[in-house]
Image 1: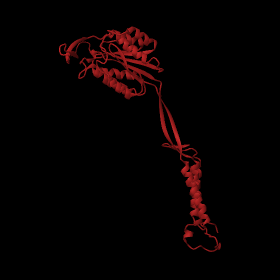
Image 2 (image 1 turned 90 degrees about the horizontal axis):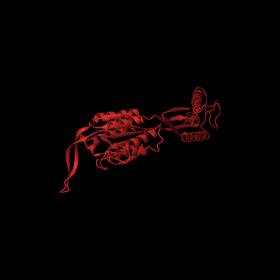
Image 3 (image 1 turned 180 degrees about the horizontal axis):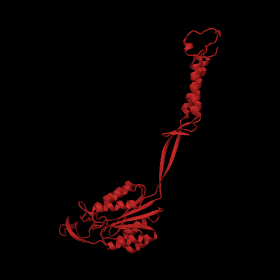
Length: 340
């Protein structure tokens, strides 16, 4: 079997017959030109034939038959053209990003944008790098909401992430609810590795599920949780919307607010589940953290290669039959080479 850029011969030994056919035709022509005479029907074997068009065309049957046999041999070699297809399989990493969208994520210590906008940009880059894995998105504040279950549809993830904004959920920080909702998305996962990336800038202050309960559930499900504490903590500027009680109009006002990050809780969640805790104090450190998580949670990718071949012998066979038929017709018309 021979192959070149998707083209191959299934039975390449027949190509030797094609080469042999060419050599036989050339030998026959050369031998005749060295001393053989041309005899046409009705003429004496000892008379020289005048140089007419029939004499000049005496090699036509031999050449046609030789070419037909050569093309027939090529057809028997079964030329084929294949289209290559690669299927990508993976051992599997299912990841859910749980993103805090509480009011404190409006803090503007991640200049030139607030914490949420910077976090969304970093998460977007993370999604684009995980094209071989199923990735999901959960947002939480006082309540938790699944924006996208684990999927390989990067376009869907990007659209759902674009839709994430402040004030989309009641204000508060329910870390336990956010973690539990992310775990629910991984409940039926058959992936070899299950991961949650929990991004928050506060302390748990509401929610129906306690963070310790959610942590125990993650341990039982063998889900690693990477926790990221976003922001410097302490007093930070936050732009909030304030409604005037007299006129009812809503205006934006920049205030300095105390925001505390429960670093001890985030460390406990990560340590108990086999993950890691990170602290991001600016946009660059947040980007570095996600890059490191991306490196830690790599899939084992396997490529399965398939090649589908299409038979190309039919035109060669038709051409061979046509040439052999032409040779027979030329022979019947009296064009032939005979030894003296």
